[in-house]
Length: 292
Image (tube, rainbow, N blue to C red; front, top):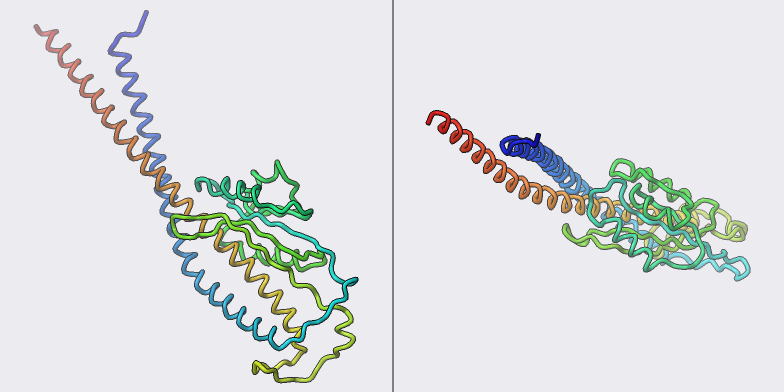
């Protein structure tokens, strides 16, 4: 026996009510994620000032020490063999629009074909890069709470006995709150002082330089240490900017999703109310017809 028209209408109303509940839950979730992303973005932006200030001061000291140092000559036959490391920095979580897809496309278009190791940071970008490229290392966890430790681990690997001479990092940069663009940063990896230098230059007594600094150790040794510090702060800045760009992208994505959910919810509620009114009117007409 075919269902009556009344049963079909009631089934449609029940189905529509369930869909309204689902969309309302989606809207609440996207709105909550939107607020969380905005809060994290604002928190990171406040800290960015101190990171930039430290980087700027370190760069000034580094330039001053470079001015006082006579370049240490390295014989051609003892020059380090070129060894390259590439790092792709994406996001750990999704729901941030085309953040990772756009970065992957940029990486594929601009990558250097020279042989070298590849490291990916962020679970989502790892899932995109790994099927196409061999990864030397991967770091799935990448958040605002672990990026300092991650940066330290990366620099320990880069400056260890790996022989890297050039570091290339692909990441997203927050050009503005609403614009995140992929960029590539190339950094020369500081090399250890030649062994011959330690033999020819024993520990010197305190000396004063033209820049006014007092050196308890030979200036080239201090410069080598500062170079390592500067590499670390550069890596930290790149990771930090990527996190800021990620949360801005997620806010924009969740804001659009929340707005779309609100529009759909409004239309569905309007249709639901029309169906309910039609159902009530039909029941009243049937009731009145029964008394006629």
